[in-house]
Length: 120
Image (tube, rainbow, N blue to C red):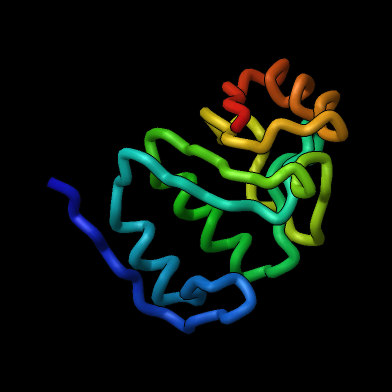
């Protein structure tokens, strides 16, 4: 009972997603129950970031259109900040991340911001 919607737009091979005005228009017309999003950077103070401008706009729109947002990040993404901000950390309900001693302090700060953290 899952409906899969593929958005149009221009395929960006760097981010492996479609981007552009057609995608933003399509996303603004939906209301998603859950958004799973990968990030290039997730910092307790800065929020979610990516090195690509169009990707930031597309992910921000999808997050805004979703009831629940689940971010997925490898430990090298935790505490890292890329050039373009996607959203504030308070837009994330759940973070799925790798167990890592190097990211331990950041993960604690992220939890203190109200994000549930699940480590694998």
